[in-house]
Image (cartoon, rainbow over all chains, first blue to last red; front, side, top):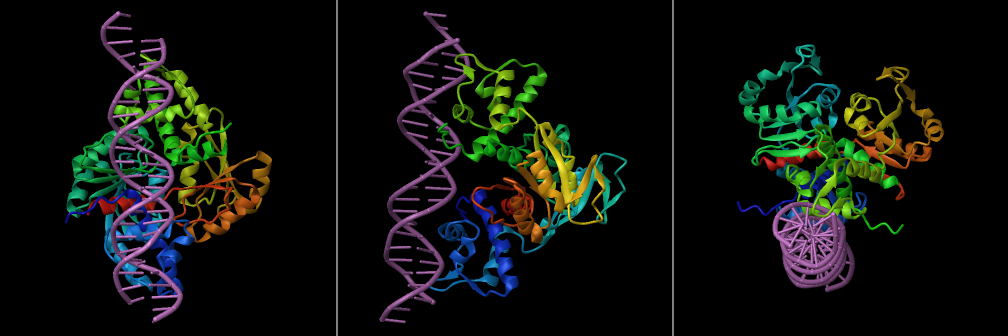
Length: 206
Length: 206
DNA sequence: TAGATTGTTAATCGATTAACAATC
DNA sequence: TAGATTGTTAATCGATTAACAATC
C-alpha cells in the first residue's frame, strides 16, 4: 500500500473532526457538508476535503457526508475503532491525572498499567489501577503486546526511563517531560510541551 | 516597532533552545556554536540562526554565542525575564497537577490563584494555594493584573467558563479541555490536545 | 433540469534549508 | 593570514487555499 505521506497536522485535524462529528451525531444530524464541519472550527472547507482525500472518498457530490458513516470511517482510519492499550510511566501528580483523563477514554484508549520506581507509590490504587514497580514493565508490555507508553517522569529521569521502555519493546512514546529525548529512529515520539505552550502565550502578549 | 511576523513554531523553538542552553550553562560551557545547540535537538543550524535573526544579532562571526548572554536575551525576548502570573481554572486532577508542575516554575511562571465551582474543593489547599470560588475570578484578575488563564475544566463546561474568563479581563487562555473554543479575535488561545497527540501516535503505528 | 457540493488539480503562501559573503 | 562561524539572501520544500469539472 504505497501510502502517500500524511502529515501529523492532517491526523490531528481528523481527530478534531471526529469530536465535532460526535456532537452532530448526538444532536441527531444525519447529513453534513464540508462547510458545516469546518466553519465553526475556523478551518477551510478545502482543507477538510483535502484531508479526507488522502484516505478515499466519503461524501456524495451535491449532497454532503453521512455523519455516522464518516465518523466510523475516520475512527477506523486513525485506528480507534477498537480499544487501544497504553501504559503510564511515572505516577506523580501529572501521571495520576492522566490515568483518569476522560479525553483518553473518550477516544477508546485504555490505560492498562501504571508504573513508578517509588516504593511509596507501588501497590497504591489510582482509578482502580494498581501502581506497579517499573522493573515489571517489560513483562507487562510483552504479555499484553502494548506498543505505546505515556511518559510522565521528571525531566531529569526521562531519557533513562525512555531507553528502558524502548528496551522493553515500546514502539511509541508520548512524552510529557520538558526535555528532548534521543531515541532510535524507528521509535515514534510525540512531545506534549505544556510549558512552551504557555511560554508562547506569554510572548504573544508582549 | 514594525515587528515582522514571528511564527509560533519559532517561539516554541526558542523556549527549547533556552532549556538546552541552561544545560550548557550548568555544565560551565561559555561559548557555543549554532551547530552545538542544534545537532542533538535534530534541528537545522540554519533554522536556529534564522529564528534568532527575527530578534537581532546575538553571536560573533567565527566564534559563536556567549551562553549566558544568549540565554538572558532569549528569556527577555519571550518575556520570561521576570515572573509571570497565571491562574488555574478547574481544580480537578489535571488542574491540581498543573499547580505543582515544575515545568512552569522553571520558566519563571507562578500560579497566583486557583478556582473551581465545586464547594467540596473550595478552601482546600493545593501546594499552599487555596482554591477559590470561580465567582471571585474577576476581582483576583483585576487586582493582580493577570492576563493568562490555564483552563482545566471538563470539555462540556469549557466554553462557558472561557467566556466568563474573557469577561473577567483574561487576555490569553491555555486550554486543556478537548474541545474547540469560540473566542473573540483579540483573545489568544493555545490548545493542549493530549488526546489528539496520543491519537496521532496510534495512527503512526498502523 | 438547476443548484449544491464533492474530489482534485493548480496557485498561493509560508516555513525550512542551503549557500555564501561578512567578519571574528 | 587561514579557519571558523555568523547573519542573511536565495532556493527548496511542503502545506494551505482557491478554483472548477464531475456528479448527485
